[in-house]
Length: 456
Ligand code: PMP
Image (cartoon, rainbow, N blue to C red; front, side, top):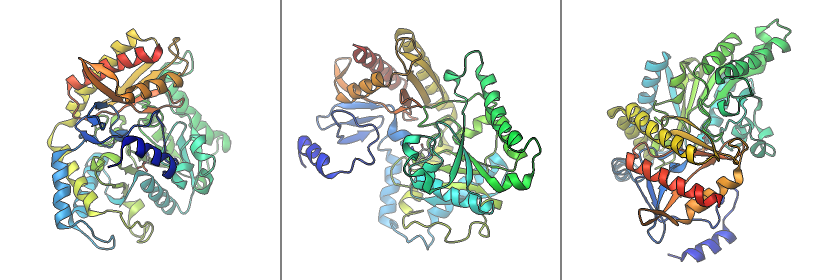
């Protein structure tokens, strides 16, 4: 294999930078991964507290999933998507039956290779189900992918400005962000304020006289993440979605829940929206379905929206959609999630981690906010006033973490962090759901060290 310096020189010359998200300096090349750790060429371990943006919920190199993948490789690795194979059907059944039990609707499951593609598919589905409507609601700070349609409903101007207008049109509504709520309001009041603002859109547009025909002709669906992912792991107050859903129901607008980042027990429930007591019409999933082993994502929708009359054959297609390697691993993931009490496990680990972050906050004024649900946790990095976003400090922290030059009990280590948030100043923690209490303590000690070094 080429030397690390040769690889970096070749990367600079031959690789597109179009998919570079947070380019660290110097760039890092990893050689190996296992459990909660990645290793560089020198064998230095890096504790990973973001797990491929929440795709690797069971930890790297999960043996059981690896074995399923190996077996599927030997038996039936490839099937053209016009033909059937067992695990596609079995996986669809498991997800649809679970949704029926939880939400009370019969429904169907549709697969594609990635999250963005599944969001695209959901946009087509929603258009079909609403007689061609293409205007959506979505949240400020929301993220739904970078393909053309998904960019259009993603609020970030940076992602949308060149490409977003090729897809649907979206109206962006404020998300109740407890830490940055207006002065003098409680999080709950701010949440009600956001819902009231959304409801007012209809009241004022139509002078208080709602004509369902006019309304239904305009807006098809509201795209939500129950907890904002790329937006900085923002957890809304408990009653927020109930309030929002009431308005949606009043005006016949569908609720599409994007669980691509928060699904599969990241927050302590299979779907994060389960914490908020509302039922989705469409639910999109991806990432952790296969523990990041093989690309597979998809969506579930209520029967009325997805039956073959509304969503006919050929509505979407990808050569690799519902590929057997992905569906075999996805099916095993669902089995594993049903065997262990992940809710209890994730809630206990999340509590331990959050308490540790709160302790750390006492020692570092630059941590303005810590919050989270389950093992989706946030720490907002600010200036010394504890409020002004400090992206530069967080960028330094990420770089130092990836230098592999931290010390833990005399051992050289690194720390892998992800950055999110409206101001790109939030550490979004998505550790393995199997992270041990010792690994959490190690992470907290490394963060402490990192902050101290980055500040000086
Ligand atoms: N929606 C959400 C909430 C996401 O977090 C992501 C990925 N970060 C996507 C959609 C897009 O998924 P993918 O990267 O697999 O296309």
